[in-house]
Image (cartoon, rainbow, N blue to C red):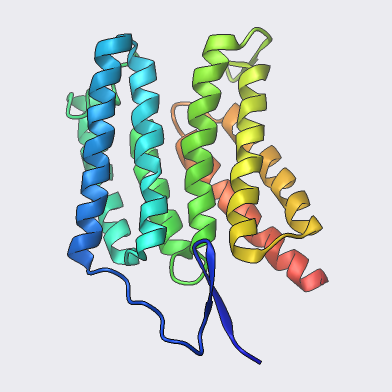
Length: 244
């Protein structure tokens, strides 16, 4: 029987030669170009909207999508972990000094940017070698779920509730759940194929991610949501494989 291995968005036959990943310098160049594009978009949004929260979430979403580039280009884990450590240090410095004004200009003190960088490093260290899809879905749930939940919840949220004194909206939480479900399903179907168990697992991940986002304060949702979502997805997969 032919062996197969799952790579991003395609199945590779291991009996045939596998195209080597691009050189590390080229991988890093592509990522830097993308981050430069994100910075340019943030500058344009700042001039057009003048809303620092919109700009911050645009940067939040844009930078998080780097994980897709890293997956596609097969960037080595050490590059991702090193970048995570470096950005974590910059984020801590920015907590006291305005090193990252686009991320720290919304009128509140939060370690969210620091947790954001740490969570990416943890997920890469945990999953990148054998199961990068779980790192990807964890980061994308944080990137798109949390980002859109905040923006759309603030814009259209009418039914409010409070957790630990932090105001949330049911509309924002619904967006978080929906985006988390779509991200989890899309990533896992691309790698593992379609199955009923996978869709049920995606529902469970979405509920966990939404719950973690609702109860986490002071920016710690940027740590609890991605790591919790990836862990639940991974453990559910192991459990379903064992049951099957």
